[in-house]
Amino acid sequence: MRQYGALNLGAALFSILLSCWAAAKTTVINPDAICYLYAASAMEHGLSFASHLCSQAKWPFYSILIFGLTQLTHLSYTTAAYILDGFFSLISVMTFIAIINLFTQKTRILMLAAIVILLAHEFNNLRVEIIRDHGYWAFYLLSLFFILQSVKKIFQQNNHSFYYAILWSVSLAIATLFRIEGLIFLLFLPFAAFLFVQQAFGARIKMFFQLNILTLLGGSALLVWTIMYPQQQYGRLLEVEFQLTQGLNLFTQTFQQTMHALATHVLSVYSARDAVWILMGMLAFWYILNIISNVSLIYAALIIYAWCKKVTGFNRETRVIVWAYIFINVLITAVFLVDNLFLAKRYLIALSLVLMLWVPFALDDLIMQWRTRKWPVLVAAIFILIYGLGGIFDFGHSKKYIRDGGDWLALHAAPNAKIYSNNYQLLYYSKHFGEDIFSLGKKFQNLNVIANNKWRKYDYVALNISQKELTQKPSILQEIKIVPTVVFQNDRGDQVLIYEIREEKR
Image (cartoon, rainbow, N blue to C red):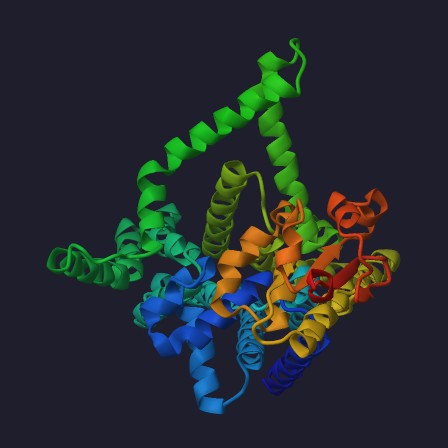
């Protein structure tokens, strides 16, 4: 017990250190963060105003938390957001270790679990981003911990099963406040109770209703509220209703449209008749590659090793629950991929966190073979370290030049100066746009907005041009023949060119 406490303390301190490092090294906040921070600051004008400010603010709980923390501590909104994200990441780390502890008391495996989650490449890579997903992942993992406890207790005929079932519902309800996917788990996961075929039917029914009690109460309250206030808008909850009622039709239509485009514009007349199988194969391959990239190649190899060798301490009930979580995650993300032909890495983190539960057991099995063969452990350790460091340190190209450009405009441009920039983050750091940044940010991304001498109506034009674009000499640079007032660039050659137009207009 003392060793477990020391392990948890060490993991907690290291997670806090990683979050502090992520916040300290961030020079330019991610685009979504701009919406969350402005929505948080707009909470002073009321929830309705703030939640309609920008697209991400329609799910306002995260911005409410940022606003509340700033009111309590008087910290900046950005600092408050990073503190919240660090706290949520800490919950995820501690819960991951606690889940592994449900399957084994072996100290070495628990230490390996701490290493696995603390060196998870993509999970750490996203610590720098101010996104509500951090809260979702934390309470999503807590829900997995509580349902595993509930299943264990209910089949032991322990009265505490109801207590854990309620905690499962509460944790997923809180997860839903961060991302709508939490509601999908809340609605569909209880049906996994009927997969425990070795248990008495009465026990399965009992588990199903225990997991649904809060959902039924919440649904009943929502129904009564709808009857009393039929004009009330329910925001993104309508998306769930749409997906449940029209999602299959939308999925089918999108798939058929993509298949038709593939057959018409890509495939030959001979292969077009197999377009459906080719598209399915392409999407499946694309999806699998995304998963491997998200968990990292070394973790993916260790997961497959654990599956093949069956080295975990998972019993039948545990496997049912864990695979139910995996199935629902795959269903959500695969449908999103087909509907949008796009899948951001953060959308797969919830799936990756569950898949990584196999990694500590695979590593422990390799360590037990140390006397007979050492190379598998050494190879695994080297690659885990490489991927881990890649998630902690930035080896890519800096975006500080964007921050420098925005700070220069904030310092030199008069408060009433008219500024154009095709970079959303640069507009934010210029501190000249306020809430107009959301409407103008989208409009300004198209450089044609300032073509044909329309750039002359601005006092400052700040162009973010990549190194590749610079070699092609964009037409707007050929049109603006004056010398930039100041230029900021990174080591790759990406540039922010700031033109002061006022002198030209005189």
